[in-house]
Length: 269
Image (cartoon, rainbow, N blue to C red; front, side, top):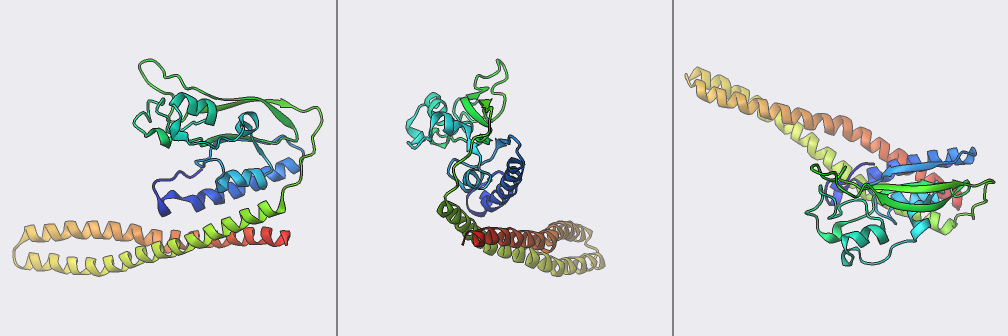
């Protein structure tokens, strides 16, 4: 899922939650049809996050690591890198990974998951693998692998009903996240549009300056103005495209996401 690139709006939490919402509903439909559903991958989300809760409460899938080892509730930074893997199942930003050896010890986290439908299978073991580096090369990836052994049930086991209060709280948290990001999306689109408009004005001025330089036999001045005009035109055009086109598409997507969650919450009431 969408990776975070920094704090605040650069964390892309809303985008990642929207992806998890779609995937969780697809998994729920497949499970309702009687299929053994397994969702695996780098979710770029820690346990207890909105993404994790969506798979638990909406998709009704279980976290194989937590089912096997329980939920880690301690301070990750107090553990050695080896114990972080054994006790917390950390797969990312471990100091044992050659790609992440310079990370702080408290940055290690579990971002890779194997979710499964506990109605049709049960976990016999879950572990972190591909830990040992390749001689002369280093770690296989910047993430370790998550691995689990599932035993298929002979008969489907009925799952306990989900707590409606937990679902309602989840939907409320998602709607709050969407509402917060709406303001960010609108502001970013406006700034990009203003940049585009300002670029058009500046570009006209630079082109006039080019003719002025040529009229006064100052070719080097005209060259500098032309170079600046190219930079202004390219950056302004790109921001304009993102502001006018992507900004509107993103807002429509946010409103659709919001309406789906509001409808789901309304069904509970």
